[in-house]
Length: 396
Ligand code: NAD
Image (cartoon, rainbow, N blue to C red; front, side, top):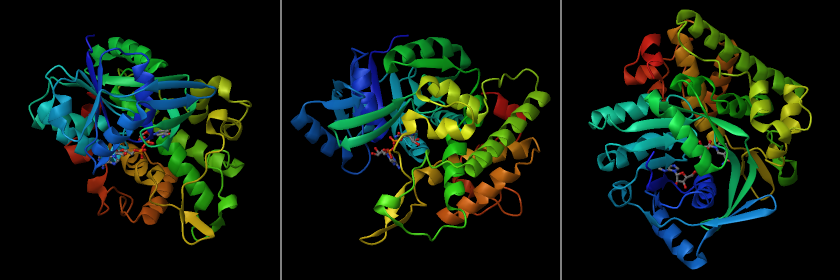
């Protein structure tokens, strides 16, 4: 696999973590595409002052910087062999539309993480722009929990997964690409057999909306002082873990039904939530006995709090516009529900979570039990890309 130039898109937490990690494992060119507002100028000015970006991983520090940052896709994507999109899913399509005219025929472009339905949007954009030879991939999650400490200067990498799944289209590049990404990102990237696995095994769709639902359903108006803001993962109670388990079980029932309908599809990597936590975090979990203990004793999740917005000097309310909801529902649960609708599988708890959160975020995806709400056009469901049967979903 000849990768001489890498372009990273975006300047959020994940991009900050990736820059020093990649710099330490890759000796070609690495550029940064920052189309958003004045981010490119701002980043370039700061990195020129600070010289490099520092990532702290436990006791260790690593350093790196991109060769250049630009707002313009034509400056930064023409030579790229590999384009990485460590972005919230709602930025994927706009970013792809900006870069597609400049992509090399043999480029590879990937979403980290993919969330659900990435392949429907990406392949349509490539086809519409006659760039069908460009290859795509998606990763099941972001390999790290990370937060910017100081823009273009410092990032904390709070936890690193043991291994992350990756699926590519066309499938034939998966194994070689997984080896390359393993070396580039310094953790095991596990090849997955198809892109449908990514959508169904998108654990963010269970964890983020499920915990928010459990913590705040019926308590939407409760105000918190700063010191009272609940812990997010460590705030998982027995009852919340039961909701998460039921959501995970509903996805496993859907997975089983798809396998019954098409015996040739390999969905063995769609794991139950507890199995996934143990697989991904293994040594970081002190007590693996229950789903609840896998959250509350997981050192990678320690200290992370619920997203809140300040309402006055003393009080906070849950931030229902946080990406835990605005990303993981339309680019997660709603996609899973759409696939379930194609194969006629019911998911009562997932429906209840979608309906509750839709109200919180001011959207309507489900109406009368079907995905016919007024905002369904904004969700990345296969039906929005002209895919209306299981056979076409399975193609990727
Ligand atoms: P972030 O909110 O820090 O990303 C913000 C950046 O994304 C912005 O600086 C901008 O460059 C870009 N961006 C945002 N909206 C855009 C738009 N509409 N168009 C173009 N660019 C846009 O996000 P993050 O924390 O880096 O997370 C990236 C992805 O990784 C998300 O899917 C997130 O859910 C996932 N994730 C993050 C963590 C974490 O610890 N940070 C953990 C697990 C998964």
